[in-house]
Length: 463
Image (tube, rainbow, N blue to C red; front, side):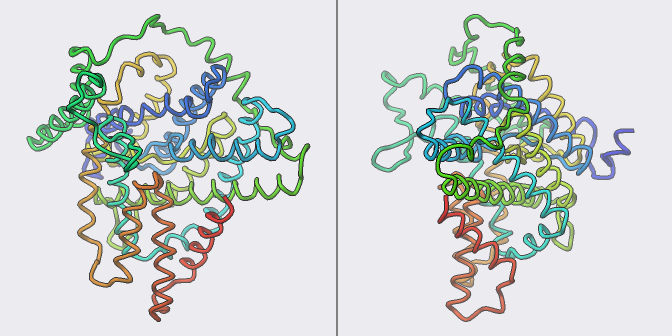
């Protein structure tokens, strides 16, 4: 029944491969259900607990939409760049024009949630009326080809950062961990070495055509982390989740404050700030999800001969709906996550992969403490390896014409350097319009490209 519904055999996959792919995607993205509450709560325990539940449930619902509506092997979860924007841009912006009210973190959190809901509704509307297809068709082919490579670099950068191999530097902003400083930084170096071992394990297993190589790499690296003493079972290890459930109901579920920002302070400032934030959320969400689905599918040869991605239309609608549902539950933007590439890299080709991942997001509610036992150094190798695979698409980018090469290059390089897929697309489209206009190649510019580039400029100016 599942085979017929999802078309598993027809897609060239098997039930075993789909299940392994779903488990792999979950393990690669499981860190989100802990990182997202940490970012949004900003130290408030009750918000952390509420957002934890909202993250698990929102991710499960969004991923089930991908499974049963779009029937494509993608997972949804709160986007890491978008949650940072929520916590470190949206909330401070609201607090700034309401400074005289001395609002609590919970009150500001409730006022920012409607922004996420509005962006989801905008996404749903443009999907329903057909604007979405015009936007996608308006993106130059060379930039579309560059998306996959840019996302691959971004994924690999996430893995290297999560592993502590790339660290902050006051001189160069980022640098390599100092492997010579073992006496003063032994734990971090230990983790970096484990990540490299995990990457070698996945690479060797993949070369030997071992099924489930990425998942096996995560498991083996986790075992090595405990055996070598890098990871330990936390003190007071417990499966009690009752307090988290209460905080979810009391602090997060349906706690959107729609009128709060407009009831006190400067109404003009409130309206202007909220509109700018809504535009920013909507633009980033739309292009993050579109680029992720298109880029990952392209790397997995899931694109039709006419250039269309199978299930893209329904996938984007599922993404938009997931955003709206996530806001109602109490989390920042739920969107298609780049970690989906790990499961697709394992051979996942249908909604069955998403179904398995969605179930595991729900299971995580009960076995939340076990998720803590999977160190980031175990999932980082999977991200680096998949990023490596996705880089292969760059060979399809045409670098012979400068006015095509520079926009494609900016699309690729700005994603990891600005920690945003949407920023990469923005720089690619804006530069494309500018250089084509200045060189008299106006015939190569489509109207949707100009409109989207202008919206990105507006977003950069207003935020």
